[in-house]
Structures are given as C-alpha cells and as structure tokens.
Image (tube, rainbow, N blue to C red; front, side):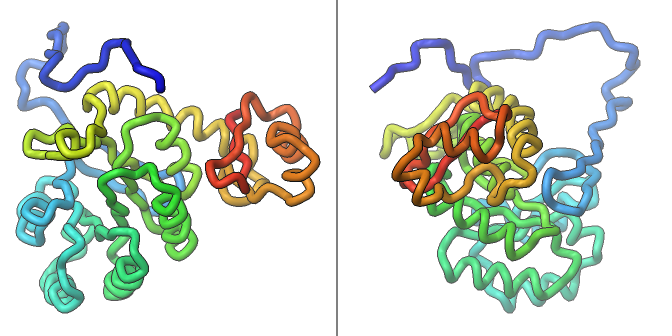
Length: 268
C-alpha cells in the first residue's frame, strides 16, 4: 500500500485569479471551439460543455434545449429503441450533431447501441459509461466499439488518472470522462472509499494525451494500439521488456506486463 501525501484539490479549494484583458465586456467572450478527434472522422464545433448521461439530466428534452446554443448532451442509456425512433424523426440534423448515444458494457448494451446508430447516419458520437473505468472488461469493450465503429467519436470513462487515460486513448477512445465520486449527491466515496479530488484528477488526466500520442506514433505499425498479445515464446524465454524492445527498437522507455499476464504494454 502507498499513501499519496501530496496536495490534491477539488473545485471548492481554488478560485480564478483575475488578469488584464483587452475585452471591454464579458459579452465579447466567444466560448465556441472547433475540435478534431484522435480516431473519429467527425469534427465538432460548439461550446465544450456537456450535459451528463444521468437519467434525469441526459434527456431528449435537455438535448433540444441545449443544442441551439452549441452544447452537447450525452443521452442516457435507458431510452427504448422506439423512443429513439420517435426522437430522430422529429429532430433536425443540427440537433443530432450535438448528442451522444450512451451505452453500458454488456452484450445487450452493445447490440442496442448498434441498433440505435443504425437508425440515422447523423449520429456520430458514442459515450461508453461505467462508474469505475479501471476494469479490463471496460477497456476491451471500448476496443470492440472502436472496431465496430471506426469513424465514430467515442467518449469513455469514468477514470481519474493519467495512465488510464492513455490506455483508453490507445484503445480507441477520443474523449475521456474524468471523475469518480466528486458529485455533491454521489455516494461512491462513502460506500466504496474510491475517488479522487476532481480538479487534481482533471489536471493529471489532461497531461496524458501528449504521452499517448508519443506512444501511438512510436508503434504505429504494431497492432491493438499500444498493447499486443505476448508471443508464447517470448512469454517463456524472454522478459516483457525484451519482447517490447524487439517489437519497437529504441522506442521504449518503460515496459510492463499486462495484468492478465498475457500482454505487454509500453510507454515511449
């Protein structure tokens, strides 16, 4: 066990420090940004604020209210297929460009997501959501979704540390949901003891994409985006480091065995 004693911060612990500006009014601030994604082919322009996919927040009504302002809504996963059909029939393309189709990680969730996305080519965004994104099953599910929908934009989470952000990006995710237990009404920390102060989690996770791009570039020719099955011979006669080094000479700074004992992972 290792206890992290360095300072961790939530939003309640900090304030914005003012600085000089050339703007005459807050009304002159333009919050719109254009985003291009690591894997998905779509681009998106709008205000980077998203309604979460909770069942009382990520609703069709919320999407209709936010889309005109360029805001994204991650629709919750509990809508039936028939409800999706009715919503799509009555929604303009501008609205559909600002929603995400949310899914869990069961086989039934995958099948339902495929059925929903087949209803309209205007649906470009997928949100793979679990309470704790540190299970190997979750990573494999993200990989499966990426394989099935190579041109869609995939949001995946929830995680709170940089190494998991890297793994999800290398597994096919474009956007990462950050946060475990920070909500004012969330009981995760009370019931499980799992969590991370939200601002520190965001800062740590924001540093991860640079590292993951380096990894991806270093092994662009290798399969599975940063993780490959360890050859049986390598498993028997060679260390994980040696297997990594042989696959990507001079590109490896550190290397470790996957938690299942059958994969090698590395950082460039």
